[in-house]
Length: 203
Image: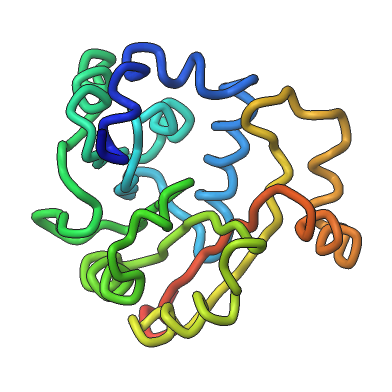
């Protein structure tokens, strides 16, 4: 069984079952997509790589959401819900025209060659790339170097303290902006959201 195949049997109700509170989790993710780094505008296109069934699209109604996933069952499940999904591997996919934003959530580790993937994304993304990173698994300095080599010379980060498999605790998100305390929490759990863009883009 490949990495992609293991999710196929869960595709039909992925959004409903993969998160303890899908609405809270995906709404929080969507808010960061909109606002971290250059802001997105109504009508902008968001290309979501490794999108699963495309559930994030429900929380970005003012944007054109296009999802890409290598698992055919996930793509079929998302299309059945009216989402615009494409079956493809994020390592090789390129959209037919540029997009304002590209996102990769819980999947940057699928990159066969991270720097090559970032270079490909930079070639078709006009405003920003947004992705999450486990800082206990990847050094931010290494990822920053790959981003810069790809042409993304600006980087904004924000802790993301919304658990996937447990309901969020009241007040937990307030700690995302708590500076040293947030850094201490990240050493134990949760992820860092990164927004990268080019200063030459003028945005």
